[in-house]
Length: 252
Image 1 (cartoon, rainbow, N blue to C red):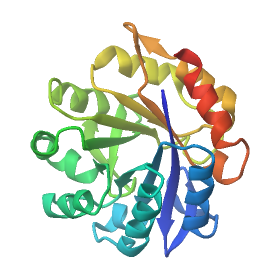
Image 2 (cartoon, rainbow, N blue to C red):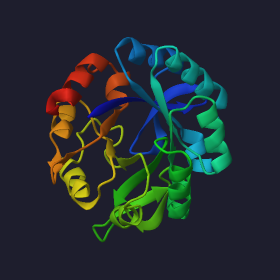
Image 3 (spheres, rainbow, N blue to C red):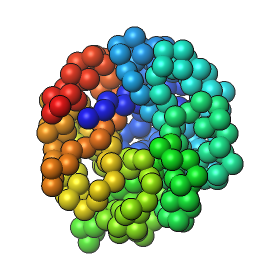
Image 4 (cartoon, rainbow, N blue to C red):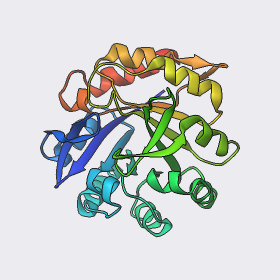
């Protein structure tokens, strides 16, 4: 299972939201310094999100993103970028600038076929983001526009629709766990592994290396999670990147 340390960008700073609430923001300072700490620790990927773009569809952090990509490339670290990528033109710009993989969120929910077409256009370089909340009916409903609105689509229905497509990864975020350090929803992730053959990357709730160890051992039908995104726990130095990598490799 791959570890993807996260950097969420807002107003040029590295920040974290709690449960997707823009009114519960914690500032972790210079994103370049945080990225360098990840790189020095042995990270192979960095997951970067433009938070304002995620909710508005207007790209805000292009300069910081490009600087992060250059910094990562100098150490052969790959960048996965998301937040507000709603057109093929913007995806192309980011990929040409050196981003290894783009994540379509709202655009993929509004037009699942768009994500599939982009995945065929850029094999191995397109992921989709399924950020979900469990609604009153007990259904995991995918969220759109920076987690501000429900999409009316269930996570399982969307995964079914992408069966057999060349999507390189599906980033599954439990919004109610994100930024809480309360632990990931392992049972829900195991259920999703039962439903799809697409590679799943878990996001939300990791607070300790034991959480990563549990994710690394989560399986269904002989399949494991492809990766885990960790933001706040690493930004607050609750454990090192090296310790996180060791926990992620526990199932190897």
